[in-house]
Length: 315
Image (cartoon, rainbow, N blue to C red; front, top):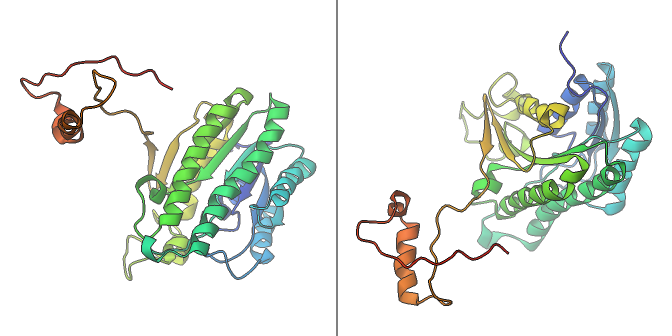
């Protein structure tokens, strides 16, 4: 009999009625977790109001398979809604072990065409929605101390490398990585890990930007069983959410097709220092040209001489 790696766990999944989010809910339930399925049921752009039927459909599918789930419909960027979601997990299932933030919307425009409302809404939904949920989950975990917990945010290649027509989306996803790193430092003492998943799969969001007839990027309705199947992004999330994932924190994990990738966080590559309190501009131009060029990767050129100074202490 297959192991149930999340047996007895309680999970909240925001965006739980979406493409990957719905699979997270269903697979988590298969793995033994009780799941709070949270979503607004709105369209990809966050418009067209609230549709509880999509949330209820996920809950019914989980229950029909013998799992435990409860659905909640609401805007988690509102503090009282987020608090109520966490309270529901505690009241209904007796605790909370895992927070998955898979919610999000997409409003694409080039930066010079970006509307203020589109910027504000995307940042609000993606980033504030992670903050509100994490705030109330962390209050619980801080009080419990010995229980521990798992935070997993959904980020994107747009947040890692940028997306030309997605300045709002890129900024929000990059900010999630920063928030996750902060969580990892602040909450590690309570046994809480915090990581980001950067999934690659065919969903309603990717349907908007598909090239017509591209066989490598099937529409979401045709992705089942292919490398773009949203379900294929979930096993790595199960691992991070499990007890076995307790040592992984502050990381960004890419999941796409048959490949799982660990991203390296930004680190110092090379540095130059001034031997005097203030930089001489002409000297700085020489130093920067060397440091930022590919030649800098090979070490100083023959005959290069530089006065060395003690690196400044970290602030």
